[in-house]
Length: 629
Image (cartoon, rainbow, N blue to C red; front, side, top):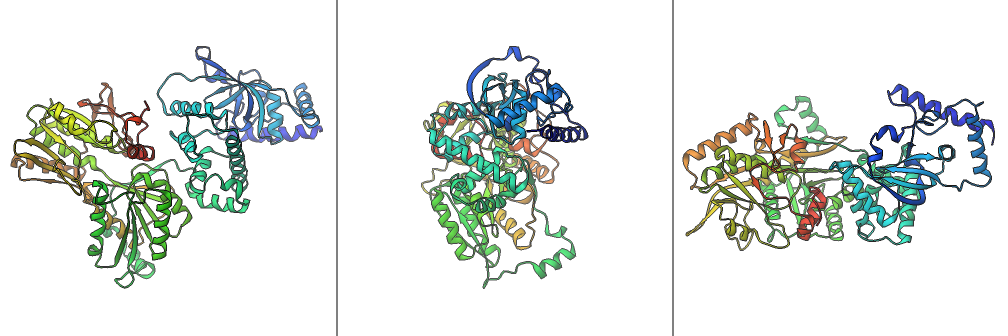
C-alpha cells in the first residue's frame, strides 16, 4: 500500500467526473435524502446483515460526503488531505486483515445508499471486490401502481425465497420466469445449494460478459442466457463455449423497442436495380427445388379453432406459389423436447423457414433460432422483445370495430355479449374497438364481457343468464362438433342466426411473408420486428351473411373503406375508460399494450389463478400482467 494507490483511485474518480460533466450528468454520488424528500413518511424494514453486491451500491444516504467521491465511488479529494490518509488506512487494513465490520446501508428499489462506511465501499470497489458485508434497512416505496414498483414487489417475493440481491430486472414477470427455469416458485424457500449455484452462475456470466464486451452485467441478459442455454451451462461449459453462446445472443441484448411493420411493402416500390440484384443473387425456387417451410403447432388442428385456421392457411401455400413452396406440419409439439425434435426433423428436410403459431412457443423458437442462425423463425404473437424471432399478428381490432357497429344496430335490448379468450397483448384492443363501434351506432349499448378460458364457469351459461340481444362469440367454428355459435349471432327459436364473422386470412398473410423471404426482402433489423398488418393488406377481414340488412351493410362497408384507406381509426380522439378516466391512444405501442376497458364494457379482467393451464401459459408468454388470487 502506498500513496500511489490513492493517486490511481483518484485518477479513476476524476476521469468519471469529467465524463459525467461532459454528458450533463450529476458528477458526484447520489444522496438518497435528496432523492426522497419524504423519506420519513415511508415505511422502513430491517433486512439484517448480509453480503450485498457492490455494483448495486448507488450512493450515500446524506449529502455530507457526497462530493468526496465521483459517481463511481472513486475519491476526488487531494492526496494531501486527511480524507486521503483515512482512505489509505482502510486500504491497508483490507490488505492486512480484511474488512469485516459491516457498513450500514439503506436499500431503496433494489439499490443501496451508504449511511456509514463510504470509504470501505470505495476501497473495495477500487480493489474489484464483488460484495461487501452490510447491515441493511429497506425503505419501502410508496403504494403506487407503476411498472417499477410492480417489478420491485415481485423482487420482494424473490428475496423472501432467496435472501439474494443482485438481480434487478427491467421487465415484469422476470423473477417468476427465473424461478421456473430453476424449477422453483416464488412461494417457497429455495434450497441453499440452489441459491449458491445461482450466485456462482451469475458471477461467471457477469465475468465473461464483461470480459467479452467490456460492458456492465445486467440481469436481463443473464435471464436470457439461462432461458436459451440453461443455467447449468455456466457451470459445466468452458469459458470459450460460454463466450461463444454469448456471441450468439449478442443481437438480443439491450433490445428495448419493437419496430411495427404495419403494412407489407408493395413490390412496386422496389427499385429497378433492386429487382435486377434480386434476380442475380436472390434464391431461385422451383417445383424441383422448392422453398421448404416447417409449421410447428402446439396442438392439433382437428381440435383447436386457432390452429385449424393456420393449417388452412398452410395448405393454401402450395397452390399460391405454383408448387415452388413445400410445407410440412408438425402437430402436438407441446413440450420443449417435441419442439426440438420437430426443428431437427425440419432441418434435415432442408427447411429454411420455421413458423410457430402460438405465443407459448416463443421461448422454444428463440432457443432454436439462436442455435440455428442460418434459418429464419416466426412466431404468431404481438409484443415480444426478440430479434432472432420475428413475430406477426393481425390488427383484428379493425374488424372488431365493424362487428361492434353491426351489433349496436341489431341488438333489441341494448345488451351485447362479447366472448374473449385470453387477456393477451392486442386482445384488449379488440374488446374496446368492438365496444366503441357498438356505442357509435347505439349510445345505450352495453358490452357484457365473458372469458372462455376460465377454469370454472361457461360463457354459454353467462349468455343464458344475461339474455343479451346479440352475441359476439369466438371468431372461428370448432373444427369438429361445431354448434354454430361463433361470429356475431343471436339465438332464436329456429336456432343460431349468424350475421358476421371476423376472420384472419392466414393464406394471404403467409403468402405476403413468404414473398418477402423469396424476394430477399428480409432485411436485418436492430430491434425486435413485428408484422402488425390489418385490413388494408387483406390479412384481416369481415364476412357477412344474407341476414344483415342492406342499409346496415352499406354503412359497415363505408367504414371498412375508411379504415382501409387510413382515413379512420377506431381509437381516434378522446376515449373514456371504465373508471371514468380519459384516454388518448396515440401510438401502435399503446394499442398493443392496452390494459383498460372502455366505459360501456361490463366485466373485468380475470385473475391469473382463475385461468386454465393453457391460458396461464399464454398469459405468461404474451399477456397482460393480471393479478393472482
